[in-house]
Image 1 (spheres, helix red, strand yellow):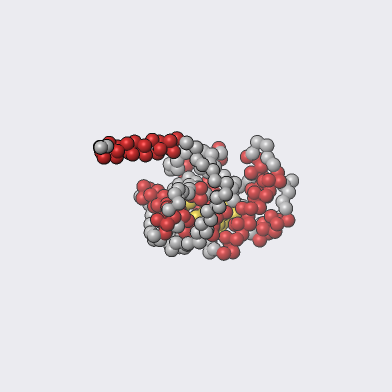
Image 2 (cartoon, one colour; image 1 turned 90 degrees about the vertical axis):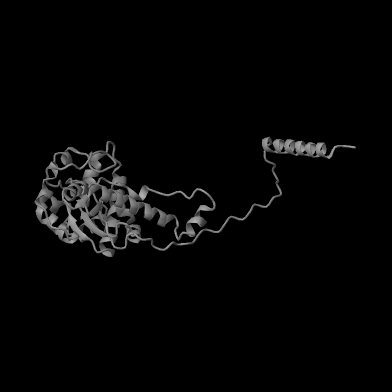
Length: 289
């Protein structure tokens, strides 16, 4: 009579061999198979989570509008932390598995709100490290996403920094080795349109780069009143303070900002050409032709 134990061992070995063969074999193709339906797009919107920083300050401006100068003036205040450009809009979370979104939804979170919580944590960490109580982010591309900033921080405060569009075009053109003039004008127009949207839809404190450089005490006093902090004369001596390294992608790194002195704003080149819409916005902001 066959030993039942040997029979069981034999079946086990055959099964193991079959599993090994299936593991190393290429997947079978079933041409008649019907593709599984894709899951419906997730339309869940998470509620607003509590923020560690309730009312951060955002400087909204175009590129080449003097935002780095404004940053170092504000950062020279004993209560204001204005670090280099943080580029929060490029910081994302990745829900890498099919079930991750469901897991987050059970925690009343979605991808956007997870990113908002992360952005808020970054600001809070930087503010805590500085020992100050007001934080300012002056990253110019924030201007392009101002509605999301308002959604993330309903109590955020805004400083709108304007510069004559022709001067921005002139500065941006001079900064690039082989400028595409049409592309430069289009870029300035994109920023200007968003600035105008923010001016009309938010309640920002509006200043101009030209006035900031011509009357820095007056302008910084106005900003301090807006932020409810006392004005400090040391703000105007930004060269005596440590503001970190000036380098590309983190703000202006020119010899002008490195000089440690407030210098007069340069005007637009006399031959600069602006499309009609930019001229229209320039007039709306109080600039002449």
